[in-house]
Image (cartoon, rainbow, N blue to C red; front, top):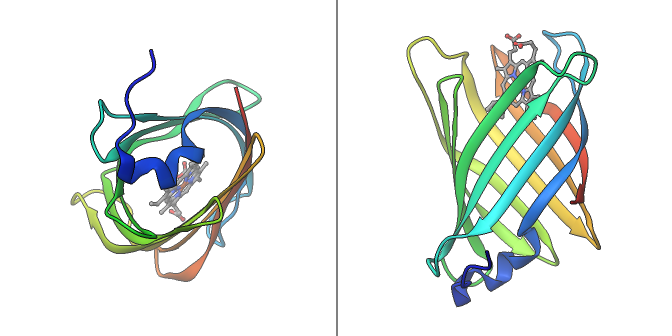
Length: 157
Ligand code: HEM
């Protein structure tokens, strides 16, 4: 069903769709891994934000891995905001920019439940070119400096 798009989120319209692909994950404290991913980004009944849903699986077994949900918020001009919640007990609050089909976001807050892993910074860059979405995620976590955790390439379904 086509939902109306708020004029402020037109800048983010290139993100809208269902995207499927694969990624790789690294961090100094873990074994490198690969994952399959589906991302859906959709308008929200004419409101100035986009609804974001993501889930991943381990390719060999289909076992669910990370998942998250959130909102991209258009606040005028090139400024964008993102809120994301994860079942691992982490909530990210970001501010950033959108330019040339590239969204760059850096956390201003990372909140954690008492049992969540220690994540202190998250940075997300998403680039859409034709029907391909590429992203990278850097984080500071578990005592390690801010660095790459994820890199993925997805295609519009
Ligand atoms: C595509 C999304 C993601 C996938 C597939 C993914 C997958 C994984 C996997 C497989 C591990 C290693 C073993 C484990 O703990 O299960 C891991 C570790 C970790 N991930 Fe992710 N992750 C994703 C996104 C994130 C995000 C968004 C954050 C932070 C906001 C995050 C934070 C961490 C942390 C803190 C660790 C633990 C490092 C340690 O304990 O040494 N991950 N991730």
